[in-house]
Image (tube, rainbow, N blue to C red; front, side, top):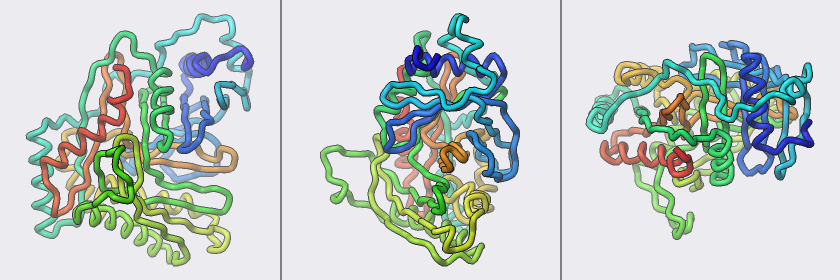
Length: 381
């Protein structure tokens, strides 16, 4: 059947198989890769950081909440438009070969989580954040908000996923659709953890400016606020290494990188797991890192309590993490940024802004607008 499928047919057929069996669905494209992947399978609720099984992990912002793990019962890859079935337990695709395809099918959560903060409320939230930082409560915090936009009757999930893949080759592009969870579309630039063979990697990504395509990245100037914001995230990662007495790591950066319509400061951290005799470093660091200083604040516990007190609602899967686990012996988990939750006729977009004592509340509001535009500029609503 794979030879007969176009990429769109493979995507939409897999979605329909998932719906028929109440399975989870994930489609993704890795940064700097043209290969796309599809996985569907039974969904497990998961609280621990077990990275031993093969599948796709989708975890909310709340690190005490249950995540969802999609077992890889049907796996497909698409390269240069050619669909290849890697595995198909119980011939799931064949069961739908003669059935009518439902192009608009995906799981729609009828009770979405959202952060309803209007501009004045968000600016007040940021102002309170700055005051708390100046009073010594914490060093950084990341307020978040959401925005609802209408979806047209012609909205097509595959078409928008396809457009994001082409528009943002440096990002992790994903569609995740799970019963009782709903459907999320995203284009995130931020690696949480990556484990390839015996190498562990993570990144510090913070500081935000609008990308001017006429300006060389070498000429970009960063403010003290942005430099300090990114340095706090790097410091947070190093402190996590210190907690497990890991001193042998490579640090490269910070450097300016492009992420869609924005630019950020980025520092890479790399560890040789074999040399440090730490084969479970991925699971250990996942537990320590999330939620990172880039999406929560620093110190983490105090910043998290402040966020819980001031945000009207909860973040659900925004600023959680997601990605393939043990795919081709590699694990890549990303922070779920630049994302939208898709409902019947609405999309809820989310964004946050890193606040330090030098933050300007009006500019932080504008930063969240720019981040939401990552999807809005591409999506056909």
